[in-house]
Amino acid sequence: METLRQRLRSIDQKGYKAYKTIEGTYSFPLFTLAIDHVQGDPFAEPSKVRVIIPRAKTALAAEWMNTKPRRIRCEDVLARRIYHELRQWPLRARGSGKSGLVLIDAPEQKVLERTAVQVTDETVTVCLSVGLPANGRRILAKEAEAIFFEQIPSVIERAVYGLREEDIRAAVELADQQHAIRRYLREHGLVAFVANGAVLPRESGVSDKPLQRGAVPFQSPPELEIAIPVPHRAEPIKGMGIRKGITLIVGGGYHGKSTLLQALEHGVYDHVAGDGREFVITDSGAVKIRAEDGRSVASVDISPLIGTLPYGKETKQFSTENASGSTSQAASMIEMIEAGASAFLIDEDTSATNLLIRDGRMQALVVKDAEPITPYIDKARQLFRDYGISTVLVVGGLGDYLDIADCVIKMEQYVPFDVTAEAKQIALQMPSGRKAEGGESFGCIHERIPLPGSLNSQKGKKEKAVARGRHVIQYGQTDLLLYALEQLVDDSQTRAIVAALLYMERKGWFDGKKTVRQLLDAIEEQWDRQGLGSVSFRKGHPGELARPRRFELAAALNRLRTLRCRQ
Ligand code: ADP
Ligand code: MG
Image 1 (cartoon, rainbow, N blue to C red):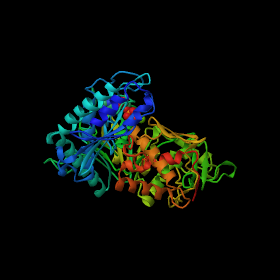
Image 2: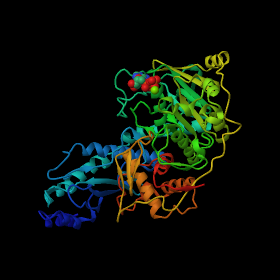
Image 3: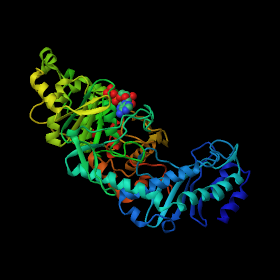
Image 4: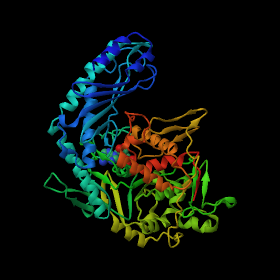
């Protein structure tokens, strides 16, 4: 501790590079401070610092962390508390660039496994970013001293040492309940659950926070209501259960269909208390599927959905630099089957119409031989039967889908109704006039093997692998665009995807033998066993990472323009 003070004083007013000399580990009364990486100049990414606290000295009793969801919840609570305490300080000390910033990678509405706070039986590790203060490029040692000797100790004292059991109990109990609902879904043939009273609409199209005024709370139709027993409360939680199979969400425009589907998309993650979606829980294998024209596709067998294209272009190993709406959506479906999805969430609004439907009149006008697409309406049932993949589909206009639905939910003024019986009646009385085109089975999925060289982070002589916000990754020579991944919900997930890609590249995992599925399994196992930060090549502070699902990692890989595969 005193060495740090001395070192800081000895470099006061010197050039910024002299800050490098403070890298190292220091013992403080309350914690150990590790200055892992010092930024090159005041404008660069802030320096990486860890604070390591003996767990036994905190209120984090072992019972709060005896399961993984509980431990993640404890970490989440601490990260939020530290963020709150940091905000009590002026955002900047003084000086140039990022001088004086002290940041933690704070969670928002979702609770994700992240590296910001890591709790083990022995320690609580807090990862911070610190903008080491300077005036121009001249070191301001006094300001740095204030950060390390006043601000950080005070924040840690209040947020971590000040933690009491009652601060954590509610969060851990919520985690237990969410976990219990997830398990219940799996054991009872359900894809999703939306509790009565849930608030689904968001504040705005760019906010993940709940709509504050005028939100109509969710209320299950009686026919679809289930009651799920959960720990820490006497009464079971009631709400709407969506069963496996094919579910339609219908209703007039602006009556809340997409809002319900989006809540289901986000329900693969847990939300914090007060979000409104705490008890909107979706099977963690549910994947949003949408059209995305312009994306690249690498050797995907889309033949179950799209047969031979004009001029004899085969689709058993379909590659393109510029997919159309329908081919992009078909490729995403096949890729997500390959990645192990359990359900597809599809919105008519963001789909290629011709992939969803070819109605009776079009079938008459354009004979099947001249139409490569087999519409999803003729494949959804086979997909469920052959691969166990359910469909939840929002439709406003495509009534032919009533023929294949197991359940039809109608949204009317934000209130859901079970109209399955009525829908079946209408389907009988008004035949669609369509012929089924889908054949007996969905068709084989040929798993792909990425070829060596598919991952290349080299740009000129330098390595370049960096996340620019949530939806753009610069990887080597190429820009990887992730705007279509609606279930990528945190910038730190994008950073973790970059770290995972780089890890696989450097470790030579793309050896021309492992399938995409095996690569995803291996990364997940690595994360499970050795922690999220283990894919980082930094020593100490692993960077600001949050765990993505295997599906978003796969989606990123699949959109890399350098990806080459064989089947
Ligand atoms: P649809 O997909 O049926 O056309 P949306 O789901 O896009 O409709 O919803 C239309 C609007 O209604 C959106 O602005 C949305 O935020 C709002 N909305 C949706 N559900 C609710 C609700 N339960 N309470 C209040 N507003 C809602
Ligand atoms: Mg809509």
